[in-house]
Amino acid sequence: MSNSFLLALSVLVGTIIGAGIFGIPYVAAQSGMVPAIFYFIILGASVMLLHLFFGEVVLRTYEKHRLIGYARMYLGRRASWLAAFTTVFGIVGALLAYTILGGKFLVLLFGSLLPFSETAFAILFWFVLSLFIIRGIQLIAKAEFVMNIALFAAVFFIFFFAAPEVKLENFSLINTNHLFLPYGVILFALAGWSAIPEIADFFKNSKEKKSLDNLIVWASVITTALYFFFAVFVVGVSGPATSSDALQGLEGPLGRGIVQLGALFGLVAIAASFLVLGNYLKNSLRYDFNLSYTFSAAIAIAMPMLFFLLGLREFMVVLGLVGMAMGIVEGTLIILLYQKARVVGERVPEYALKVPRILPYIVGIVVAGGAAAELYFTYVG
Image 1 (cartoon, rainbow, N blue to C red):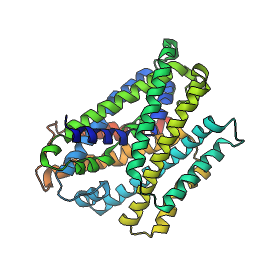
Image 2 (image 1 turned 135 degrees about the vertical axis):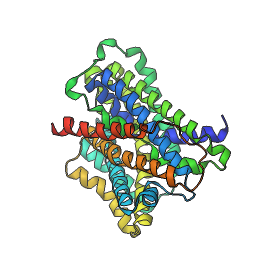
Image 3 (image 1 turned 60 degrees about the horizontal axis):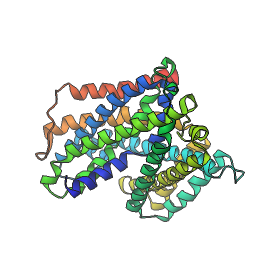
């Protein structure tokens, strides 16, 4: 593997892995390990294919776009507005999830020292980081680098100390009452197609771009395996007491000091992610919608807190809803883009998938049908 391939792989893996990893152990404990393994396999394969589909769309197009631009180019203005809506919804949902998780981690770190509630800590987390977004911090690459180091340190730190405490009796096989609960959370955690155009741009020539499909496969395998083993270790230690943030339930078996150190790493990681996504949303509103700097910044920082103040403060609910929206809307758009670009694409791509014609429809059923099933059985039924 070349240095450019390894660097691009690290960027894609680091982009995919985010706050969703902390929600996976809880849904695995609630549904049982059999459904969780099923979702890891089915959704892991489906999301990998969506990444590959989108990669081919990028390689079949001369102009540089993102999902909104590709939707406008291949599917029309209405599709671009739909892509714009789900992009904003997804980023605001992710910022809200980071805010909620930030409050949980701050309680673990400072709850015994400061008389603040989890809600107050969450608002403090949001307020401090929003100041940086307003001031226009342009340290995104450095923030991503710090985020990746902190997040991987937290995960492997937990692996190391949790391994001796894993007990078979802590695993449940299946719980039919929460059968569909893992869907949205795992999909949210696995999705990273927004980074595919960036990765394609990272490769400087056609020879390097030919490895994009291999890079996507490797990134998918690495992230899915990491999520699975993280869930196994946390659930194996916490069992039914597994918490929605993955860390609080570890305090009894591992001790408060270990959990606090994990919370510190996690806090740095989600803070960096908050800055990255907040700046991305602000700039997207400025350049894609021609809004003023002040108005764009105000929307980017106010929307997550608005939903938080309205009472949407359940970390798992937020991850599930955002994951479902991504599955139904963005997953479907990528499949339509792939099918259209294969017919009217402007250039010969460096890779072209040779898959059965029915496969994109199967992927569409998995991501959209699974989202509809979770919405009904988890939130409606």
